[in-house]
Length: 476
Ligand SMILES: *[C@@H]1O[C@H](CO)[C@@H](O)[C@H](O)[C@H]1NC(C)=O
Ligand SMILES: *[C@@H]1O[C@H](CO)[C@@H](O)[C@H](O)[C@H]1NC(C)=O
Ligand SMILES: *[C@@H]1O[C@H](CO)[C@@H](O)[C@H](O)[C@H]1NC(C)=O
Ligand SMILES: *[C@@H]1O[C@H](CO)[C@@H](O)[C@H](O)[C@H]1NC(C)=O
Image 1 (cartoon, protein in one colour):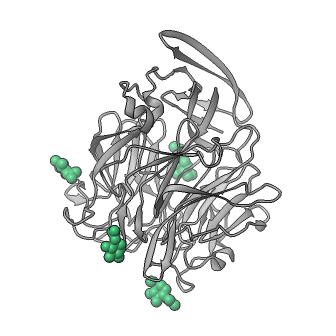
Image 2 (cartoon, rainbow, N blue to C red):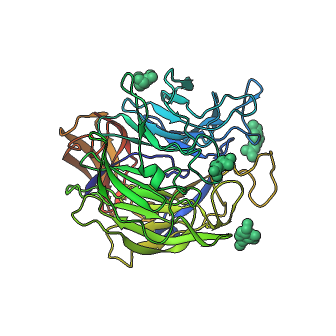
Image 3 (cartoon, rainbow, N blue to C red):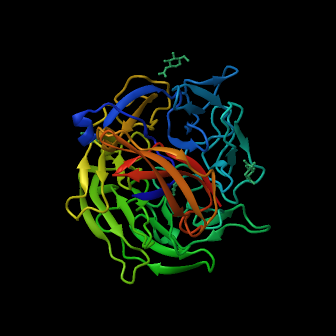
């Protein structure tokens, strides 16, 4: 039995944690269900804390199916209980933006693209959404803009809950270059008078370095990867702590886009990063999905990349940590590069990666979806034809652990607020065959913000490998 803390970042697929009928195939490969329509293409998605709702954000263009007072809008709140949408106000162009939770639970979305269809330029905008469960909340502009224009930046929470905002370019581009490159980072909220801090790493990693991969490590430093380069960076001293070896085989960032995840931490707090897919340029005109995942312990004494082969190559994959500590890898395509209608040959079959299994047996193929490129919108016109029309259908994927035949455990009592280092009780009902029992666990909360930055989390228990429906908790 283990307790996992995790927050959902911007992923386009989310998960039911509910009782499912026993289904032998689904017990091995999971199950897709079509559940509703999103009204906007879900380029960005984030769970709204303390609710069972998810916020979708897309780019400003013509293919929205949602209006407010007759005017098109490009964000919605999607209700996971009813599968209904509520239109949210678009304040500026959110195309190519980035997002995070703030330490007080507010959702933040920043950066973006040029003015479009009467909507303001979004390059340096900061938009805030204070979650609610009563249908009254909406996006608001923060009075503080970013210090720099950022198209395709990355945002990561630091140990004190402030946000590290890195990279981007000053305009949209098929590939970054030295003229438009924003080779700096900034902290939000920034100290008075503080501006962007230059970072040579973002020059050295040109040109495939947009949306860099960034993960907070348990010692408070940051793992930063762009293109094939990777460093451990100390934000306090503003120094590179370790130059890591280059990531083997392929570029991993836009337009040769891969994905990355920190692996779930256990009590040893030895952080490992997993990077999967990307674009493998086999000739100047041909790029195929990269097959490899690369895994490293960035703060170990001799960090080296361990290479593993996925069952499929993938450019533009998404990765998300599941409730049992495995990693779901899905979406993406096998041909071409990201952006500008250059991707094709979608990879419909997700795989689950089990980081604890022996090397060589970590990947399991799941049930394929029949809908390609969820969360994508390559179209400027409201076309519903073509090989990849704008996609409004919402599917859920239920992992195999929901089909074991044993009802999932049920959390009866969990704290709503947790303090670092403090012990707490969690009470749940578990099933073993037809036997039902009540379990009380006494557990320590994470020791500090570098292990889990302050903010909203889903608190869960794992009983014989089966998670419960998670409970929202605020950690501070
Ligand atoms: C668009 O919205 C209308 C009504 O609001 C709905 O009937 C239709 O199914 C939606 N279409 C898509 C593709 O979501
Ligand atoms: C969280 O902090 C931000 C920035 O200070 C503020 O604008 C927002 O209203 C706060 N949210 C809540 C729920 O208090
Ligand atoms: C850099 O990229 C921009 C945007 O695509 C382009 O207009 C410009 O010509 C490029 N500059 C160089 C030196 O390649
Ligand atoms: C791969 O991309 C090229 C270039 O866009 C295209 O001509 C070709 O048809 C694509 N192949 C597949 C299998 O989608």
